[in-house]
Amino acid sequence: MVSKVWRVRFAPSSKNQPLPADSSAGKTPSIASPHPEIPALRRQAKSKAACQECKLRRVKCDERYPVCGHCERRGAVCKPAPPKSIWKLEMPLLIQQAFTKDDGTSYSMLLQYYFERVCHIMVLDPEHSHNPLSLPLLHLFNQSSALLHVVQSIAAAHKNGFRHSDNLTECLVERKHALVYMQQELFQARKHPVATFLAIFLLGISSPWIEESMGLEHLIGARDVIDLLLNDPAIHPSDPTMQLIIGLYIWWEMASSFSLNHTRQRPLDAGVIYEAVQANQQQYHPLAGYSLGLFHIVANLNHYCRRIVDGEVHDHRVEASLEEQLLSWIPNQENELSFLLSDAYRQHGLIQLHRICGPSEGQSEQENEDLIQQRAAEAMNSLLQIPLTSSYLNFQPIPLLSAASEIPADNPKQRQEVRSRFKALYSLNNLPVMLDAIDLLEEIWELRPLGITTPWLVIVHERGQMFPLA
Image (tube, rainbow, N blue to C red; front, side, top):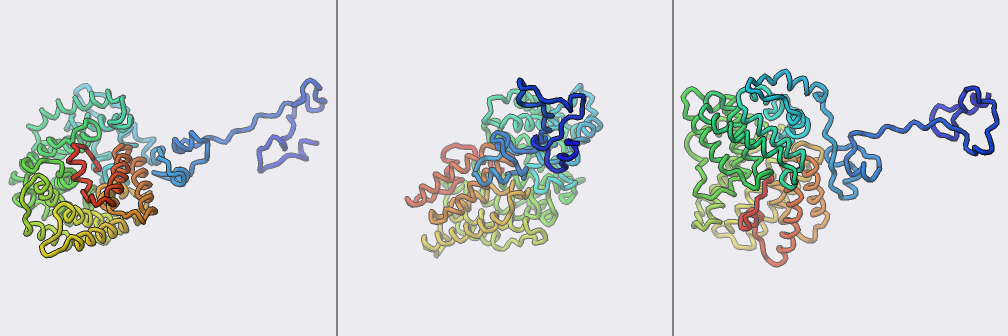
């Protein structure tokens, strides 16, 4: 009867649990056993989606991605579990069904890791059904062994913390295989253009993450493949295949071509490459969004600024033309986040133009400085409107570093927001350079009161550093 009186339904507490209904229920507990047996409490299952920091501190994690509320409040670097995916259970079966290579290559768990943890960090909308760096790759692996091995190398590197890890053997072995196959497949670029180009692209952009190399030889090789394809009368620049390839290449040029010596740069504003950009700039692209035209302008600006840094004479007509192109470019306003990101890249280009090339003709140094501060404030306003939980965050580092470099010392709140944003970027993509960017910013902020206004692109170039923010 006692057990029925004290039975409760809402709290599994030891104080209110009924006594076990067995043969010993009516016995008086022995004096030698002051604590009668009580059924073991049912522990609440631990969340598998909690971040590493919350697990270590044994606190409840709200599992927000990519930065949980607890880490955000503490200013800690959050290392989250991968976002939940409806494909997670089906992934091994999908890979095995599509994986029909006849060269003895077997399905690797690295592929599953890549599709679950890595492919989403390289596109604007990872949930989009046409993400070319996700499941569509499965069918391309049968056309390019180089592509298969470079994907597995990126997965292995991501799993072990990229170049800051001492355990990259698996990654480097995969890259060796990729390079061997690539040498063979380059002769068949026309046969499988997308697979071949994607293998070159992924090798190139991942080189600074892994090999302490900017991978610019791959950028040059990619241009050779594009010129080969565009000079083929049977291929039209607006074909979906070429639209994908052109967008990837222009985005890559925009993100890294400043690091390429100007004597090795190939012109982007003439010939078949220019015609291809014009034919595709109104179409949505997984990496460029609707900003292909803008990225083409910024890439041209990078080429010109690198020539100035290398000692060539200023051409004020070119500088005026680049500024006019940036100011007159009209962003697509259908997607608010895309619009904000595009505006930030526009301001990034204008900041670099005025920082590296100096005042325009008839403009004073102070007017130039005021204009840079205005551009930086507008860029920061756009970037901070993009939520940390948005996939568009992944494409912020370049304009964020340019704009944040100009934040004055009397705005410590915004500087802290930038630190938090770069930490969130590291949580999202696992690239150590995102934390390096915070250190670089701290150094730049110390130099600004001394009158040293060297832009970050020039600083890392003069030091010979690799700063792969994209």
